Amino acid sequence: MQTRRQSIDNFTKCIDALIYSSYILSDKKLTDLMRTLSTSKMLYKLIEHCTDDFDFYAQYEKSFVSGETFGKGTYVPPTDARATIAFVFGLLYQINTNQIELLPLLDKYFYAGENTDRFRNFTMQVLVPFRTEILHATKAMMEEQFYVEPKEAEVQVKPAAESQKRSYALTKKDARQIGTYLDETRAIILQYKIDVKQKTELVDVYTAFRATLFGDNAKLIKSAYLAYKYITLYYRKNDNNISRVEQILKNASIID
Image 1 (cartoon, helix red, strand yellow):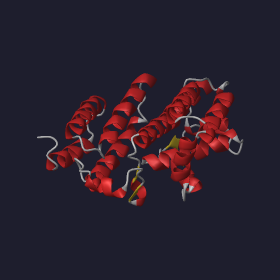
Image 2 (cartoon, rainbow, N blue to C red):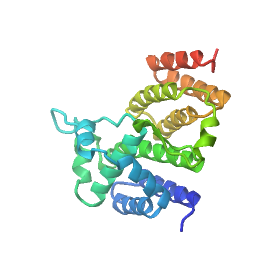
Image 3 (tube, rainbow, N blue to C red):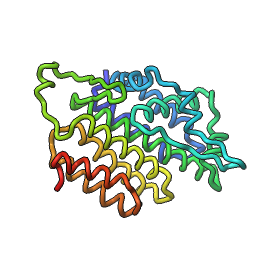
């Protein structure tokens, strides 16, 4: 049986191989990734939770917006972590089982000059956020702090009596609100036409900040916020969400 760490390492290895693969070699890489997701007890549990009561086809209609001419369609990513995991897993499953053809999808919604470029657009807009959210969730599961935000519930390994004693730097309401603002920013980041490495690093900064929100370390939240603030200001001058997040953190006395 795989350990949790082995599951995470195997997932990271497989999805990175797919992200940095070419279109021609993507079939086998995708099969390897799907096998990794289905054979890990921890990853299977995560996928099962995220896909419970999730309407894949409704999200598909929202995420893939047709254009008026060939190649002018756009991809609109889900706006929260749970939906991202559920939708992308469902999409990859249907591609892997030939229920959805990848090449027409690339032509319609990720158009670029060559198939390799179209596949690169797909990996950056679809797979990189999926990778980020899976690793974020599994990190929380490893730390026994896996929150089920959309259903207003918590899934914790710690006994209830112990969890009730814990104090948080932010109220859950404020943490969720900041998370919503970060999701909006991330959706725009994913549409940036910048170097793949830069885009991945931007998403990592976003994820690192989001991961601190339900913790009790105010200094850690502040540091993660400042990293998010200045790197976002550098790439997107008019991000109104920065001021909104800043006001919440000021009200919570996390920043001055």
